[in-house]
Image 1 (cartoon, rainbow, N blue to C red):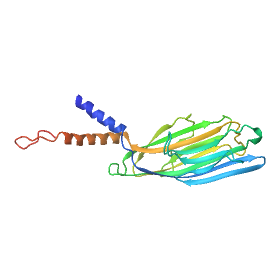
Image 2 (image 1 turned 60 degrees about the vertical axis):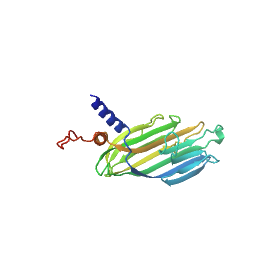
Image 3 (image 1 turned 45 degrees about the vertical axis):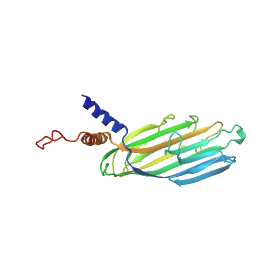
Image 4 (image 1 turned 60 degrees about the horizontal axis):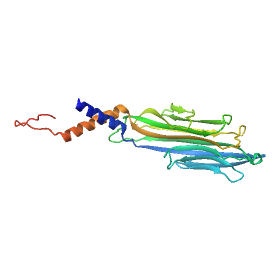
Amino acid sequence: MKKIVIVWMFVFSFVLYADVVPFERYYEGTANASFRRGGTVYSLNDSTVNGTADAFDTAYPYNGGAIIQTATGGTFPDTIQVVAYYPAVYLPSERPECWSRGYVSGWIDIGTTSEYPLGTPLELEIKYGTFDEYKDSDYLYRGINMRNQNGDIVWEASHSTDGVMETNSLQIIAGTWYTFEAWHVFGASAFPIIPNELKLSALVFDFAVVPEPATAVLLGLSGLILRKHRMFPARVKSSGQPLCR
């Protein structure tokens, strides 16, 4: 009974702390922000490859804008963040009408190793969260999806998570690739955001590839067998035959 408990403790520990499988992530992003004062529209535009698109400025005639970035620290490091932010303007005569758009498209390429060769069942963990400070009447359209190599949508989300990062799982295999796209539209020319108070909306996401649970258990058992051989080498009788293996 003691041996069984030890085996399951080892397997559970392996599944819980399984190594992350290597993969490559690539994305392109564009950010646009517009501010209307009187009859004039002032715009900010930027684009990026695996970096930051900064269409944001608080100096007149602007008032915030949109940013796409990869977080380098904080609570959610390495996440891709699509953010729209308009600081409060308390004088009605100084308030611009605001709207912005952030768009990200990219792919992830699932790597292979000697431990996880081509075709090995794996699990893709998709982290997804939304963080908002706006009125229900403000116009907001956002979402994210993933497609397989055939172009079929295998996962999508557009709901609010109320400031919580969710983790979703997708069954995949080593040696394949998937594309993703995310969009975040906050306000529009016909439905602008009025910054009479702070207006903020963000879409945050990230990916991780881990062993599929059954695969992790098998690898854990294999490791346990190897450890057993090292800890309890075969003993030999006088006849030269091993007592146990």
